[in-house]
Length: 468
Image (cartoon, rainbow, N blue to C red; front, side, top):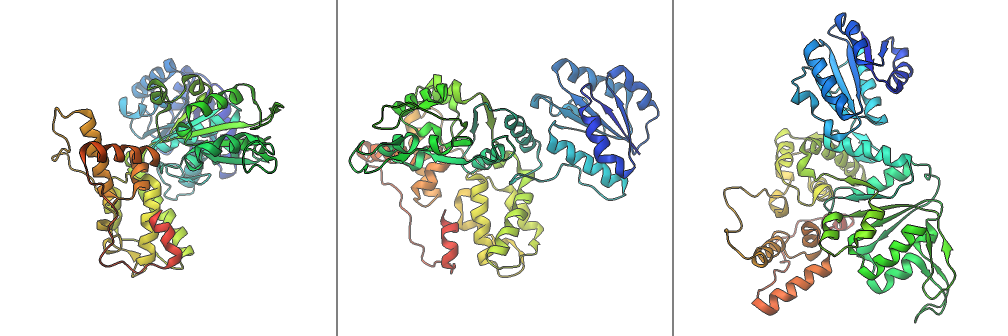
């Protein structure tokens, strides 16, 4: 068995030598495509070809070359640009797989090569965990690659995606592998802080700055000095505060509330939002100049419904955690129960799946989760709407479409406004404003959370998890 590497940077070959030499795997390295002819001509079916694809012109040229020559072994296309993922399918390359080039995917590939050398059955995809993130779909591997690239520099990063997709975990991963990992990681949630207190918590205040300010306080920009500041739900920040934040982002200098002395801060800024920040800027609800400052590196997090192959991995990950936490030795999941969970839409994404499994573990009757333990009927938010029953007839005014969608979402979550706001991608304040407007103009009854006739017996220590 041997590994043939096509990489003009020599980076893959060097890592392959370090990783595979002890396993007795031979390495053949070529830097140019024309030099690949001889190794391919003598290749065996158990050989592995690893190809680095860096530029647009290389992608098509290399894929066409491999298609014309043929290779009997397994091929890994390590691509620098996510748009080149799927080359193996587009060019009908047998036994080929494309993945983002990163340290994680490279190490996972070498692990499979080493396992194949020892005769074991290795997984056909890279390992499933990455700094607390779980998955091995192409969508999440692209996110892993972007994390590694973003961590190398000090540029501002903006993470966006639906609520519950793991944006804070991504921010923590960037900090953990960056040069600032020995510094603090401070989190500020714009949606959780009242507007009249947000400026003080961001920049700090001096004694006497306002009623109740009896002492000097440091804000998060001071607390994060030398490390990373993670600002969550950035689009919830008011426009006046966005203007003040812009000045700090530009010059890394700020003034405390009530103060006059400019203060310097040395931070790495990572932001997150459940909205598309570019669309918010185009709509005028987010400052365009601030968008261009914070979105130097963009990381879009896919919703769980777009990476269903990761659901079994996430299920096993959470089962292991909750089995230990709740002292319930769950050995596994019945295949039909796993298929059922993989088929659901999970509008609340990974957070919803996590809470769903916490309830399942607490209420499970045996050591294997079955469909009876899943209580799918108790979680209407995960039901998958059928395409044969459209919600809105053509020609409805947009305001009426929005109204029906919001009220329908509230019904699905049994009147829980916090959960409904998360699913709709808006703030609770915005949801309350819209409901008030509907009630005033249309006299629409607002759904409220009903009290169930029979409440399942749930230990008190688990209720917070189940209702989050």
